Image 1 (cartoon, rainbow, N blue to C red):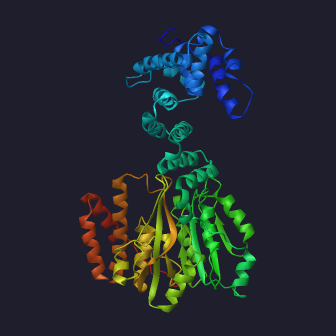
Image 2 (spheres, rainbow, N blue to C red):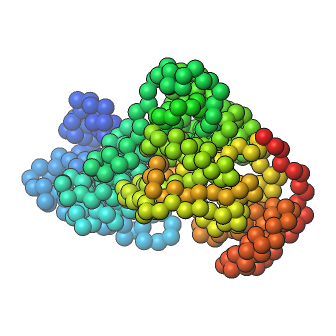
Length: 503
């Protein structure tokens, strides 16, 4: 057998090697011998052939090439020969530029030459490496964004660990499946990985639309407007909608959903639910992305809201208590000076499949107007209900990076709030598909400071000197560089404002 790559790589061989995994995936009748029988025998154990086989169909296909050429070798000898060839190829790839063999394989296999060496190494480890080597190889596959390859490794790891498979392995498998748009399978992995914990965060089962209207005794004017902004949440949006429609309350609500021109199937899911609840679900389905044009979807929905109260939830979070609205609205009606309420929730880290209650659930607490205005604590959107004192946000909102923090600060100008720690009524997801998680820390800090500067400008205009002073201290303490801080403050100082519209 030759251990030095030969050139050129026969185009017809690449086609033959691709046919086998494609046929297997489709349930076709092709066997290795059928495909490899069409290959010239002298090419079967060439390094380029084995590399192409490994990339196209894994170690099994590469070893099938060896077996056809050298039928006297046993399984361990075939694996050793593939490994020997692989080491030779990887040695040639030690430099900065892709080696000649990678350039030869890139076009027939439709792969990038500069990733082929790493893909080759990872594929062999995922197929033939020890269980201890699998986690690192899976991580390498995710770094390559090769989600089928990473999923292959996760499936092998799960098979090796059996009932002792930790939840994080299921979470990683679900993430790979999500990237592959196999959402139903991803959810099954999550449910299996969570086990009994899944019941704690189960989505609600809503009644039919007629049953809801019957419960409301002929009332039709919405008391609560539920506003939901969504983008590429095909896998998640149904849980959010179930949480809205599953509310058991004696007053009407409306469901306003804005989809910002999702590129997946989010809008199809929304349409399907609207057909079932045509009087309650009022979608705004964009064909052009509005955020990229500077239009804020939350404010589009706020302008359409008819309820006395507004409840917020983004499309990848959801409610799990049917008495959520009844509890919060009842509390606010008992306390007319309260501008908003928020409550406890489950924090669900999807990648690790970790579920934890955010607060201890022991004591409800008042939030002073000053605490709200200076954003001393975060009130997460899936838990927030507020009085609709306004139909538009103040103009300083245009300066802020974080709409939820700005909204909380604005609510403080209308009165105090309440945090209902004893009520655990929602699930807030942490997942890598959000726009926030992948950002570098410096960018995150800049957006925090940008939002504080916007809030500072709002309260400077309104004459809230104590709030301005507190935000000044927070901005000064930020590790963000002084030049960027000065630029953000200068921009805010020259910002022209107009009063917000009343409701």
